[in-house]
Length: 48
Image 1 (tube, rainbow, N blue to C red):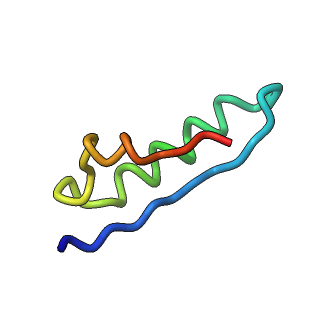
Image 2: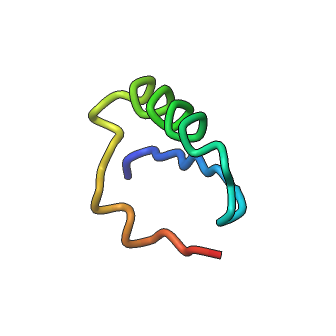
Image 3: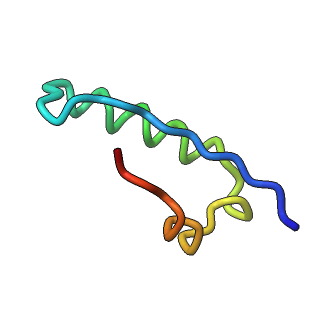
């Protein structure tokens, strides 16, 4: 079994600082090794 870790950011749909949120997301994505970024795992994500 492959070890995985999920990082979630919870913000309201009306979040007005989208540029800041996008910057944070890009920093997180660039910090995670490509080998750990598997888009197939998104099938298991549950939106709340």
